[in-house]
Length: 303
Image 1 (cartoon, rainbow, N blue to C red):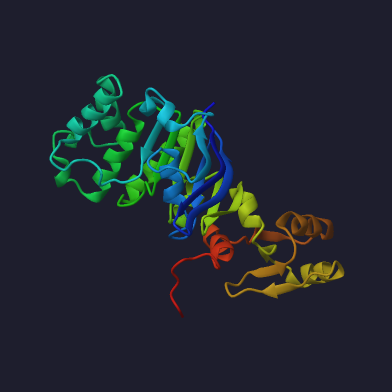
Image 2 (cartoon, rainbow, N blue to C red; image 1 turned 180 degrees about the vertical axis):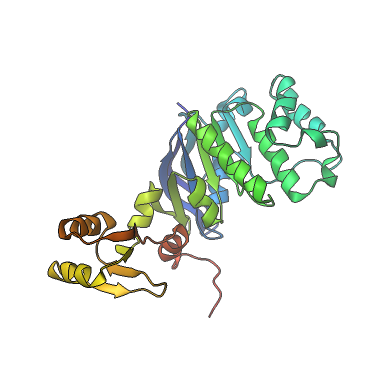
């Protein structure tokens, strides 16, 4: 089983708790977005999971085992925490060859992941000549090297161009569809909403949410419908009989608060009112996230 299990995980630096009693699971077959303001504890949690820091208390395991207990860890877990970690004097191919040799990974995998990440043509170039986006692709190639069942990616879209952002989005969703466990930390809400199925949100080291993307947004959205109709008079009267109000929107459409699109559709069909356009007007992930974390941001500008 490739699930990540975090149980009562705590990391204290003196009196400050960077991670404070976290408990959650990251399951295979879906992409889990790992969100939270700066200083929320996301990077610390990933480092604890990879054995790079020692927990004050609690456990962070993968399939019930600590990362440091795996005899061939790159076969089990791939991680991108810092795209700048590769030695600048090495070529991209040599960097991957070094990692492959250290974990008994067949050398053929080096060329496979260079192709998979789109940097095969730059394999003989030294890393110091790479742009941030190319370094990011190299870091992802290193994470994929052992063909692991678990991937931990910290800001994987950082520095990527639009084509690269689409590529990493499709890569993550494809790997999850194969049954792998994908945990992705990101500050880009628009990108997270495009790739994540599930969300884990931290604030001040504590768990704020552990839920599906849809449930997370719905819990922080006031039901509202946006529509167009060729007969607003009859629709307004029909809605009023059920206690709802049809209101003119700025874009020439109409809105109705406190109701869902399927309810309006049923009501309009029953009354014989033509509806030309109908949709639920939900909050964006960014709006829902800011609503949840407003009191947990370590740094916030005044307005």
